[in-house]
Image 1: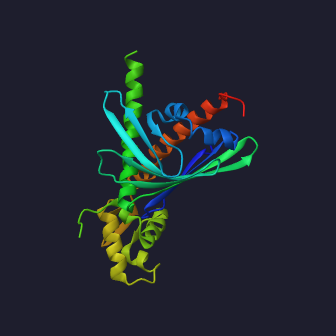
Image 2 (image 1 turned 45 degrees about the vertical axis):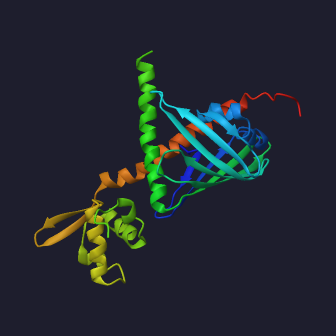
Image 3 (image 1 turned 60 degrees about the vertical axis):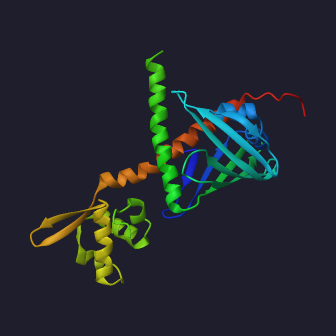
Length: 152
Length: 109
């Protein structure tokens, strides 16, 4: 089966590339990144601030099943509607450091579009650490989901 | 120098990746592996040592010879390493797609 979301993380590099094609017109895909209520739904996080413009910033807060809160924030370096967003991303109170994200939105057809997310980390080690975190998170998420089903 | 070998550092090197590919098809002695490279023999030995330390390669004594073969379990761990991260994004994006397919603009533009 072809995977819709592809990740290209070359060994020893401090960057990675996430690509995804959507059955959505470009404008709708881009809108999902702009409207706070929509971002909240698909990112599964609370949006405290989303100031989508050059020199703007953003701030999210996620609460896990146990009620622990995790903060994320960054600044928006470049914002061109239906084309690109360049921003930073940082987890608060964590040692991971800041990462730079280049988001590019492309029209494929009238009803399909493509997102390319290029993430640059401080070092190759930082990148691998983040990937490993994703692994732990994935396991936790599955576990939480299982719990919520079990305790229903 | 860090003595604890990181498996991702181990596979970051192109020669070491070539060694893994080579050994993937059959178990080989250090000499047979080295004959595939222009690199000096001690350099290849060093690579083999690193790959063995991080358990990507396993040694097997066969008579007087030591054969190196791939540790498939460890290789699988690496392949799976990015998968949960990919899945996390895939789930998010699929959700985004579902939400936006039902999206009704607040006001007509």
